[in-house]
Image (cartoon, one colour):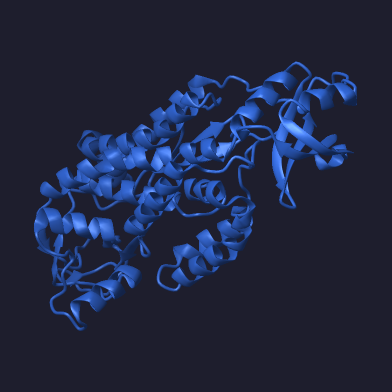
Length: 430
């Protein structure tokens, strides 16, 4: 779901070579105009300013290879508009991970998601007590397989998109770590990979960032179309229960034999432009449709997407098949990952495009998230998380190399995808 970056330089405390030796090596890739001793407390011991000779990516590879035997890492920076090379003592030595941990976490997540799928799909008799209901679902776990396989396929595609692109770019990346979340509507908090090396440049960071969401969408969209084709269209209504002499679903004042409802018992999934459009493509109508429009249709749908209200009770809506429910969750995961902040995929894309100028975008993202909280309170928690961690970015070793034209076009495409999957109100309960 997100990428966690290892960004510590570790060295063997080997003696540094003479400055003249290092300067002669640096001079192979940089027309040196200024040399300055650095402060190890600031992270570097030598700073060179000048003009790179030839292509910046080739220059970085050449210098990095030449300094590797000295256990020195070069950093390419732009300082005051000037090309700068910083030399840092130490190199990153990735440690192999324990695959058993990945396997165990995936197994636990599979069971947790299977349970969530069973809770969504099971339609047989249920005991009144909580323990009995849980046991019923445990004994009917198999009914949750369409949801579990669909959702985990999307998450696996997303994470292995990151993984394979990272490996192709020569980066040391871990296998995905899945996070089980038992007794929840999805059964998981998603997954993450660990990049054990800082990205070499913005291009590498950009490629890693977009690979996950694109791979996830490639799996999610066909599953959504299939799931919606399997989903009937019915009337949206509140759930009614019959009062019995035994335990009830929730506290109520109904008399025996009467009916009652439980506040928050029903959940209505949120809508994005992409989700709304695919429902129209498959079902031939905009869903959920209200009993009547109290505004012109365009204004009604803008209001509904951004606020989730008014609730279309009594109107028509698609009754999601488990595969469609999982695919909708996949779109939501894609949207959340593309939020342009911190270590999320969207944050990596933003940094790859704008570099350190992202600090000017951060307040805008924070304010917009706070404003969305007035329509869905969960955004206030997200705003708090963004406030704490949203300014932390995986800064590439080479920050001089810019994105090429093809990647800039892809960056625009990612912005379009973000707007298409934007789900201002992920869900509403009633």
